[in-house]
Amino acid sequence: MANVVIIGAGGVGHVVAHKCAQVPEVFEQITLASRTLSKCETIAAGVRDRTGREIAVRRVDADRVAELTALFREIKPDLVINVALPYQDLTIMDACLETGVHYLDTANYEPPDTARFEYSWQWAYRDKFEQAGLMALLGSGFDPGVTNVFTSWIAKHALDDLHTLDIVDVNGGDHGRPFATNFNPEINIREVTAPCRHWEDGAFRETPAMSRNTRFYCPESVGEYSIYRMYHEELESLVTYYPSLRRAQFWMSFSENYLKHLEVLQNVGMTRIDPVTYQGVEIIPLQFLKAVLPEPSSLGEDTRGKTCIGVIAGGTSDGEPKTVYVYNICDHQDAYRELGSQAISYTTGVPAMIGAQMMLRGEWMKPGVWNMEQFDPDPFMDALNRHGLPWTVQDPATVSVP
Image (cartoon, rainbow, N blue to C red):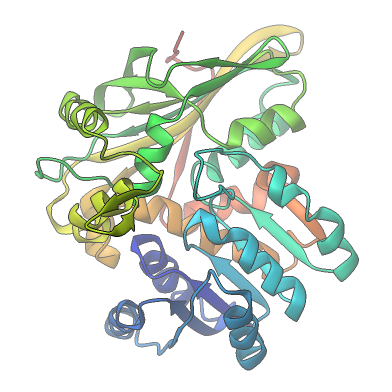
């Protein structure tokens, strides 16, 4: 049994803490740490009420390596589960190297001052982790994360060669608010407003943000939604490890209401990530906007509807063309009834726990820095079914995107 530290007390941290507590045979000792201790205490109380387990709480500033190393030396964890901001990935990785602790996150590093989503900074740590005999698992959320595993499962079991890949993320939930984001507003808006990149004919092609959209029919009566092509980090690793891919795209659904509000916020400068001076104080407009928008973790009780996230892969099987669709559907209210969470946090937090479990049980354990698709998908896929994210295969697929 293992000792883990979870860093981050937002909606995903809430889910990870609860899900780890549900698996005491793996997660014997759990510490939840964040800059805001009161958030940790609230989550710990919820874990106690729902599972009967006690988890420890600590305050830590994840921007400061010294604070992190002091915490890790005190607690001596086997693994750090990082569900803090992507800006903090490198400081946490540095602290893990300094104290001899394995590492896992759900989103790749990005600098605070630019919306650059790429793995280069973390991949540069490969030799350091390998030489230290430590493992870092990158992107163990849903997308990235489960979508990478879905892809590797298709490559192992359904297709001999992958030629096209479309990752489709539909959130059919309605929280009833005029404007809110279902995960960290700062990260969400940075992703959506960044230029789009997709893979085609051996290179990434850049197009303006949200400039291409289509309609997508979700299975199992989830409904029809407008989906928009945008860049997402798993494309970078997937085209690296599946070089037969000729085209790879990521799509996400957005309502007209969301897009109208976002357009106005962009036009008035509220989505800027460069500092401005207000009454003699430097502020980042997007960070101020985050402070006045609803906290995503507060949306669970009112959110109705389902998410539908999956991978549509085309290629060949036994020399014949074939397309396969693997997806998960998650009900917002089911997630709230189980953990007091909406489905966006649930679908990210459950895979973080499963990835940690894969590492701690030795099913996925190898020194170095790794992406999800580099490991055997089968035990992870089995664990998804056991821990609340069952998946379905359409073979051959009956859905497509252009």
